[in-house]
Every structure is written in C-alpha cells, then in structure tokens.
Length: 77
Image (tube, rainbow, N blue to C red):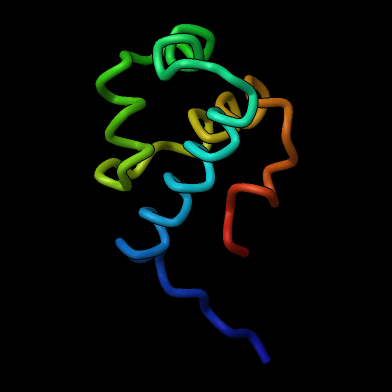
C-alpha cells in the first residue's frame, strides 16, 4: 500500500532549523561561515535556522556538506 507523506510542516521546518543551529554551534561556526560556504546570504541562513524559510533540497544538501553530517541528522524522515 502506497502512503503519501504530507509536506514538511512548519513545526518540522523549525525542528530542522534547530538541528542545523545546534550542529553549527557545536562546530564553532558562525552563520556567516556556513552561509558563505553554501552560497547564500547570512540573513537567509538565519531564517532557515529559525524555521522561517523552506530551503530547496540543493541548499539543504550544501548545508549538510558544509557541516560534514549525514542528511538524516538534519531531516526528520
């Protein structure tokens, strides 16, 4: 039986952002450090961390690469 997963909820985006922030802080990186490496603005990255933005999968993959973690560490599924 095929089940269709609902889109990522606002609550899940907030949790994803919190995970990203926690990892970034553990690695002692600034928002600017990560944003520059990913190729996005610092303000956009800050909104991702707060769960206010829904980044593309390409941006998420770049963040994951920059933080040197598995995507499963960040995404809730």
